[in-house]
Length: 481
Ligand SMILES: *[C@@H]1O[C@H](CO)[C@@H](O)[C@H](O)[C@H]1NC(C)=O
Ligand SMILES: *[C@@H]1O[C@H](CO)[C@@H](O)[C@H](O)[C@H]1NC(C)=O
Ligand SMILES: *[C@@H]1O[C@H](CO)[C@@H](O)[C@H](O)[C@H]1NC(C)=O
Ligand SMILES: *[C@@H]1O[C@H](CO)[C@@H](O)[C@H](O)[C@H]1NC(C)=O
Ligand SMILES: *[C@@H]1O[C@H](CO)[C@@H](O)[C@H](O)[C@H]1NC(C)=O
Ligand SMILES: *[C@@H]1O[C@H](CO)[C@@H](O)[C@H](O)[C@H]1NC(C)=O
Ligand SMILES: CC(=O)N[C@H]1CO[C@H](CO)[C@@H](O)[C@@H]1O
Image (cartoon, rainbow, N blue to C red; front, side, top):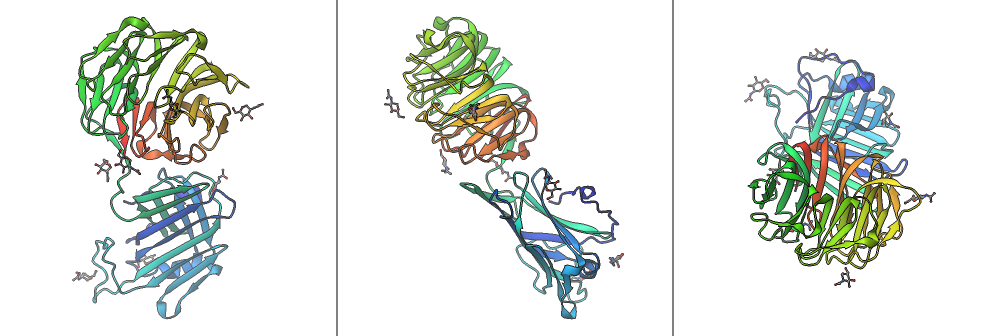
């Protein structure tokens, strides 16, 4: 796949030649150290030059190498001045150097087996047009944008044209403040976002996942409940609970026990993965905003906007109103695996945590009222992550006692956040923006541009964070595997 580059941004005018060179890159490697002059990238591949004059053009005017993100945002640009370029003897190619960087084109007779052969039929004995090995090493760089894959590398030659290649088969490794990306030629690696069209385009309000990410359950505001048992590929419309103003759904680890709440209605529970439902009237008809479940589905906690926190220890049959929580603008609640640690957030208020299944509550992050919108918890309840609409992502590693603002993903209309069991992998969605993923407990974030910008309402994660499901309002469910 080739991508059009926005070369206007580089101030280069293009004069299209009859036959464009074709670049195929076997690898693009990127190391983002998040430190000045420490970021680097390199590329290896082949260049087919049908007109046979690329090296002389570079020798005359130099070339500009560009690395681009999945969303065509420029990560890095390196200009090779003609003075830094040297033609090799006997027309064997060219080498260019710039501060911390070099690139070379060296003639090769070997037509690589593992890369696509260009369609014009060059490189046989009767047409000896040049085929080059291309190498680029760009050290001591500073990336000023977040790297996201697939990656595109391009070389622009002023007045001549440009050649570029996009590598989509990518792997990412994150360690502390260093992220490594390796993109090869070929089909995308498993690990991509898929738009799941089987359930249709709807006002998806909330989505929940089983531990292994295979069982998903999603609710439509003013519609039905939908479930999937194959990680989102196929969906069953569940009519058992009727068409209602569903706002939130929670799932047990195995996906068998579900609990969903209706705005201005009741709480509903299912013990057969959503086929049959029971209306739980014990907690009354309220402005339910969010529901959370323990791993075994027995302990439930739900919040009433403008009211209290309610908890159940018998899968929703009976409920206790937790008056100690206070009557507040509750919007989201999260539970530890065994339901003993709860954390809930108030829009235009604070974060509140409970370590006794909701009996007592402590306000947290009280130095400012914020428009908290969603909260997620690790299995043991020690790692929490919460988002502010029109603000930042905040994380805690001590069950909510202290909180740190995570600014790397920016100030956005954060709507929903999900966490892996160990709290290291987080995923959050922006209403009218992108999905973001972190693999270091929220310090660095990668924008998931493949899923596009949407009216994202909700996101759910499997236990180890390897599978995600996101739901869009007036759109589709997207899954990452
Ligand atoms: C390269 O060769 C092509 C075809 O002969 C020609 O159209 C083009 O102007 C040449 N470019 C340069 C920079 O010499
Ligand atoms: C980021 O770097 C690119 C070139 O690498 C430059 O064009 C752009 O202005 C920089 N942006 C900021 C915000 O520094
Ligand atoms: C060799 O290249 C020439 C020129 O591009 C082309 O006409 C011819 O068909 C090619 N031969 C083979 C066997 O591909
Ligand atoms: C995540 O869990 C699933 C099963 O739930 C497993 O198949 C997968 O290999 C795990 N991935 C990692 C990276 O541990
Ligand atoms: C719940 O799990 C935590 C650790 O995750 C543990 O400390 C606590 O004792 C458990 N509570 C109950 C009631 O099992
Ligand atoms: C308020 O708390 C946030 C974290 O919740 C912290 O980053 C910030 O420095 C605190 N501000 C003040 C004035 O204490
Ligand atoms: C292009 C590609 O490889 N897409 C894959 C994305 O993930 C889904 C499900 O995990 C696969 O079915 C696709 O083949």
